[in-house]
Amino acid sequence: MTRPVRRTRRTLQLAGAGAAALMALSACSSSSSDDSSAKPDTSGSASSKLSGTVTVFAAASLKESFTTLGKQFEQQHPGTKVTFNFGGSDSLAAGITGGAPADVFAAASPKTMALVTDKKDAVGTPATFVRNQLEIATLPGNPDKVASLKDLTKSGLKVVLCDKTVPCGAAAQKALEASDLKLTPVSYEQDVKSALTKVELKEADAAVVYKTDVKAAGDKVEGVEFPESAKAVNDYPIALLKNAQNAEAAKAFITLVRSAEGRRVLSEAGFLKP
Image (tube, rainbow, N blue to C red; front, side, top):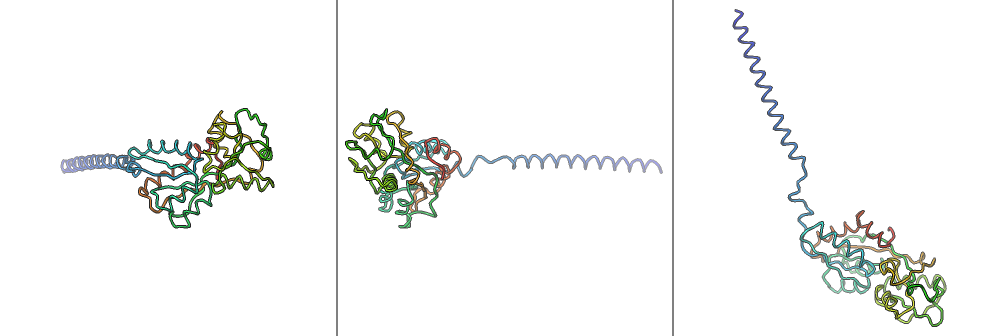
């Protein structure tokens, strides 16, 4: 009677060992499967699928920083290309509402952005991503000793302003009015880069431009700050356009502009936080 009992116990022990082995194999298999699913799938992420050209219409003052961000975008998304049309925001807005192909619009003022949104040519609400402040650009060394906005009214001083329809020109007029000053420039330019170039080429003694443009010009000009500029700071809005040919890539570019990296590049260029 004792031998059958031993055989039964031995059988149970073997069965138990087999079950334990099966459970271990099952656990290993499950663990292997879980590890595989936990790893990020880099073979088909949304960002890797972006391709084609993104056409960005942007205010002239954004040229340096947006060019840098455009190159970064192309590196982050192989197969994409960012093309820019830089100019006066009012001219760019007119082009967009006139049917010019563009995916993104970055304007130097809410007023010029409104030229596009009022025509229902933008998607959603434009987002302010930076601000910019005016500064006086003079010849290197500031030979005319310009120290204030009032100094620009000196007789014989050749001063250039942006056209009043351009954001930098509208801001300059606002600063002049706040100071109760009247200034007759030798020329009105269609964008801020054109105004700055006049000084760089020594065709003008001074120009009222943005701080970012003075910084970008390096030693070609000298910057003079003036307190009235605080009363004429411009907000810069950016928007996806209704007729964007590459909407997904355009959205991704806007995301980059508004990201921490975008803010870093823009801040280094002299732009203010929104």
